[in-house]
Length: 307
Image 1 (cartoon, one colour):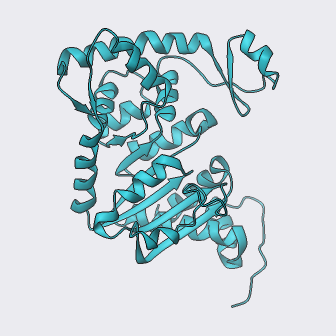
Image 2 (cartoon, rainbow, N blue to C red):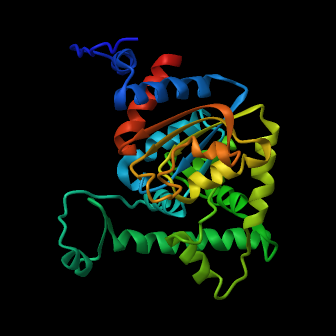
């Protein structure tokens, strides 16, 4: 097949642009088109459970509403994320914000009570509100469960029930019964606050309890499609949860990490076949680049295709 030269026209829809990428079919454009078409198939196929994993500062980076809408519209079946993205969802739920345009003088930022994530900024005053409000929620959950161990998934579900912000990922997950798994929860500001709460209380998280629930979801569904935004622990937890069933049936990965170091974050999805984390014959697409640019394009094209 020849490479068709792409055309860009005035007033093109996202899907029309994706179609041009698909007609080219090569390099990054070709992979992006394949990812968009595969995502449309995943969402449309009622037999496929869609697992979404989030690593990196995606909520601070402006993707909170995108994730929230996927949950609200039940276009994903579960979410696996870092504790940091949950923390930043709560920060906004409690009235805080993420900011831009404050400069890169980190010592000056430190003196001004500003934390930096790339070119995203947070205020210590917003975290002070977060700390006070999350402690109140911890206490409500503790009154409910006492010292009986609670899985991380159920813990996050309970937190969501106390959130008032209608745009909150946690609240929408609670309302729509979409489970959230966060295997590295303790490695976050939310985890730090839980540790501080437990200096005088005994709210116990059972991390292994999540494996029961997650494996049940894997075995209850005919097929699993994974959407891996970034790498790290959420990516591995998503793929490894499917190991006992021979691996995921399809997967999309967006990453900027490289394969040469042997790290999981940069590993090509095909490598997962050797571990039975992706099935032999599974449909896999890896796209290299910034998630905050590529995933909105991929998703917009997919939603256009299935509308």
